[in-house]
Amino acid sequence: MNRTREEPSVASGWAADLLLGGIILLGASVQRLAGIGFALVAVPALVLLLGPAEGVVLANCGAGAISAIGLVGSWREVRLAAMVPLVAAAACTVPAGAWVAARLSEPTLLVGMGVLVSVAVLLVMGGTRMPALRGAKGALAAGAASGFMNSSAGVGGPAVSLYAVNAGWTVREFVPNAQFYGLVVNAFSVAAKGMPQLTAPVWLLVGAGMAAGAVIGKALAERVSERGAQLVVLLLALGGGLTALGKGLWGL
Image (cartoon, rainbow, N blue to C red; front, side, top):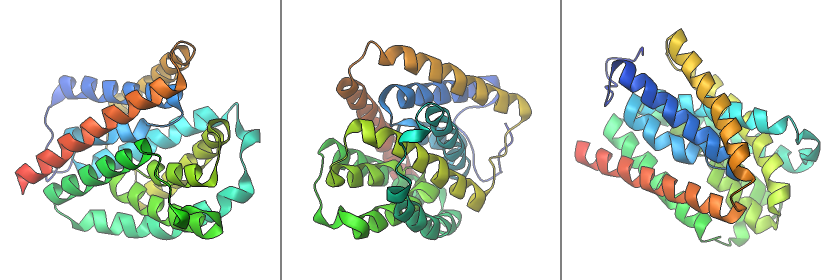
């Protein structure tokens, strides 16, 4: 895989390529299974493998792609009026997140990403209620936080999840709207930072992982309860976030 000199990986060659494909497959599987989770599960592992810059932008690409796949059968259920303030606010803060991420050292980015992922997961697991996240102002606040977190750390979903909890959305309402939002905000993030520098064979491996993960996740969705699936996703994400935090602190 092509990487910049200042972003060493924990593995190299075919082993790293296969590990990368496995991470993408796992992230796509849990996203298709639970409606959330690609970035939460994949970002910590991709960051440890590729470094913060490449890992986050590849997660942006993958999360956008799996959101597009999910929208194929549910785009008619998207509430465009409700999405406008979220998307507009995110568009304003994505460049700021990309700017910050480009100027911090790798250990600092790892610490920041680990903290953001871990705190976000704990808030979502607790179903935190925040009056500030209700109504139009809540949508703008959630979108702004999500856009910044998505471009800087690849994890914009939890802020939108917390908004949905406080807005009283059902899971059925949340999933298609989250997929629409994920497609748009990840497109913004990739546009702000550029595509990751991977070879053509690795891109093929990423695509295969996405496709296989979507199929596996759909099959598992028929056998696993929604609540159980989301708990597994959040626990995996928490473990990854704490691992990235530990590696960043060690590097400091």
